[in-house]
Length: 133
Image 1 (cartoon, helix red, strand yellow):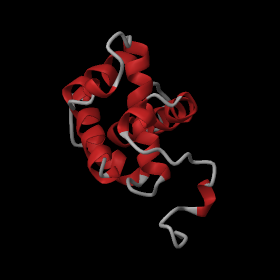
Image 2 (cartoon, rainbow, N blue to C red):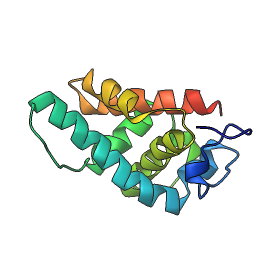
Image 3 (cartoon, rainbow, N blue to C red):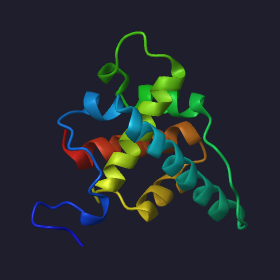
Image 4 (cartoon, rainbow, N blue to C red):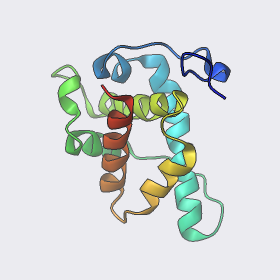
């Protein structure tokens, strides 16, 4: 249930950030985003295989998806692959925390694509669109 400002009162710890650069460079969001993105990925793998899976997303996949989605430009020029993956994770979890991209929607998007980079690229594009930034 959302409060009068459209925020989920369960996630009062969510920072109010003004732009994509702030979201994607927030280290605390990236830490939470790492766990959330791996859970999302594990659920997708579980659905595809028909059995429970616990797995982690390779940072190369997230960094490539970030570039393909046209979001690399929101990070400093010398940002390494690991930090690019962190940025993708921060954006994904921020959209979820803001109640703009439910878990099920994320799983459905990732499930549609055989190519994992393509799946995460589309997830990132949708997160940016829904955040309206």
